Image 1: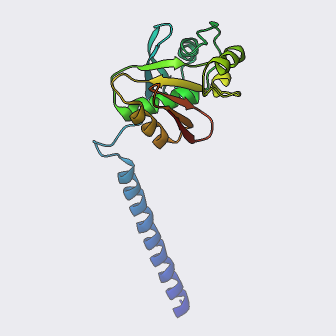
Image 2: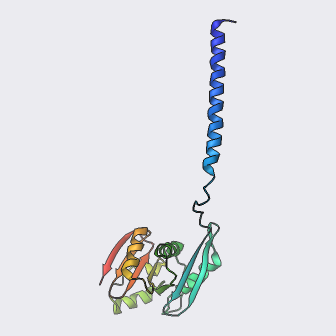
Image 3: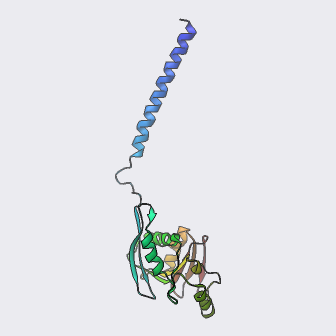
Amino acid sequence: MKEDDSAAGSLSRRRFLAQTLIGVSAFVCGNALAIPPPDAPRKIQQRELHLINDNTREKLDVIYWKDGAYVDDILGQLHYLLRDHHTGKAALIDPKLYDFLYQLQENLDTTERIHVLSGYRTPETNAYLRKTSLGVARNSYHTKGQAVDIYIPGVDANVIQKAARKLRMGGVGYYSKAGFVHLDTGYARHWSRG
């Protein structure tokens, strides 16, 4: 055996042993890191909402998202709760709006129901409200099933709007004199009206 062959074989064995040691270490450490500590937060398995429609007095306490998916028949109940109370017409509501309400409810950590003043609006209802009320947008997100006006008893509307703005999940309008907050799933922006 030549001296060079012996050195090459030795290096090859060293490399093999080093790589094996690195591989075993990575496997052991990787598995140790994959096991969450006992007090680690668990993945959310469900999302629930507690709502009341102020105009119809209908209440819903529902789990609308479970095991990684929306629950279709529950979404139907929510769509109906947020219907245009002037005409009785319901529409598909953007599920992101329910997620917005859920996150807000969680962040405010309240046991009170979220009171819905206005959800979906038909274009006709929206046109009527534009004539009789201030601050109603011509192309309102309400007519697209992407907006809701809410308040929560015992929680100042200013606190609600600040919490909603921090979420950056859509538009947030603060109506201080009327005491409600507008939420929509459009781009993140905010405004205030007296």
